[in-house]
Amino acid sequence: MTVARRGLTPREYRQEIVDLVPRLPVAPRPLGRCVGLVLAEDVVSGVSLPPFDNSAMDGYAVRASDVAGASADQPVRLPVADDIPAGRVDVRPLAPGTTQRIMTGAPMPAGADAVVQVEHTDGGTDVVRIDVSVTERTHVRFSGEDVAVGTVVLRAGTVLHAPQLGLAAAIGVGELPVRRPPRVLVLSTGSELVAPGEPLPPGHIYESNSVFLAAAVQEIGGEATVLRFVPDDVDAFRSTIAAHAAEADLLITSGGVSAGAYEVVKDALDGHGVEFVRVAVQPGGPQGRGVFEGLPVVTLPGNPVSAALSFELFVRPALLTALGHTGVDRARTRAKTTVAMSSPSGRVQYRRGCHDAGQVEVVPVGGPGSHLLASFAASNCLIEIPAGVDRVEVGDEVDLVLLD
Ligand SMILES: Nc1nc2c(c(=O)[nH]1)N[C@H]1C(S)=C(S)[C@@H](COP(=O)(O)OP(=O)(O)OC[C@H]3O[C@@H](n4cnc5c(N)ncnc54)[C@H](O)[C@@H]3O)O[C@H]1N2
Ligand code: MOO
Image 1 (tube, protein in one colour):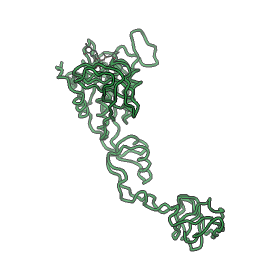
Image 2: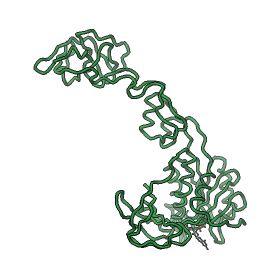
Image 3: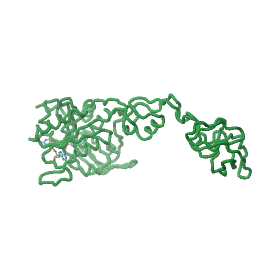
Image 4: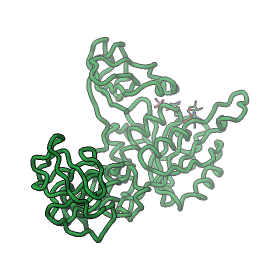
């Protein structure tokens, strides 16, 4: 059995997990499947936006000088020489003293320098009465005023959300180079576990870690495959992993890593590429990580809040880094606690809390116990009590990690 090393700090352990998960390969991906992913290369526009001068309004293309001085009392009448719907390509030049009816997005005729909105006319189709004067450029959208051809429109490292994907489509790009989503296997262990929705025999509990972990993986852009959880049986555990290892980038297990007699994860992986350690954090002390038969593995403790916090502190930054994100840290702030709290000396403790933006106080939710899942679900921040602090009093300022 591997001898446990000295307790790692959470920061040291986080770096180990970041180093464990390889950067994902870059490949072109259809826009619709890029949501939330990170652009791997700069995107240069091959077109101008707008691609040609066009009308911003339904109305009449004019020379501004032809409608100078027009008003409701002294309208100007112009012959309507043509109709220009959007998409028309054979637009004729605008002869002086005439107008052409034009639709929003339709190309401006050569010689026209402004558009009169249809609301300021009688809508005529042979001759139109124009009730306003306009200055040059009124209601015209000029080629290249949004994007000039040849410019970088999206920088490598940009997280692709709806606006960036819409822009890519607007410049005619159908695929973007991104690091593909990590494929993460999630495996819970424990003979006491029962799937939600099934009857609950005495002495059993509903399995929740895999649901949490898969959702957390998906929330940051990963693809999670939940393996049917296995009882405390080393052979069943190993064969379950072996059957899926080739199709994954990372395996996350929960449970079976502490000091009990039936620690299936530890028994199966210890000495086979995975090392088990204590991290000076609470919850989340017993941890393991390594590479088992070519597959990076992170073994989280089974208590639901321990597993959740371990994901938050260690796995989330690693997966985000693998995806190419640079800002992987949660926003932090400080606030005064409304409740006194004690903390084990020598360990960073994370309590759960509620904090509203702009408020000076944080309200701790529930106690420190790593089984208090409802308190975790009711919180929106973690209260970080440093390793050297064993008590904070009401009104003391504490560090917060903001979870949303
Ligand atoms: N003698 C010691 N006992 C324990 C120690 C220790 O250092 N010495 N550490 C404690 C700490 S801290 C933690 S955290 C847990 C970690 O234990 P395991 O990773 O071995 O997890 P299990 O024993 O399998 O389960 C712990 C707890 O969580 C429940 N659980 C497990 N998996 C799930 C799941 N998928 N869904 C919902 N609930 C789950 C399980 O029923 C247990 O109640 O060890 C302490 N003990
Ligand atoms: O580390 Mo355990 O996670 O304190 O409950």
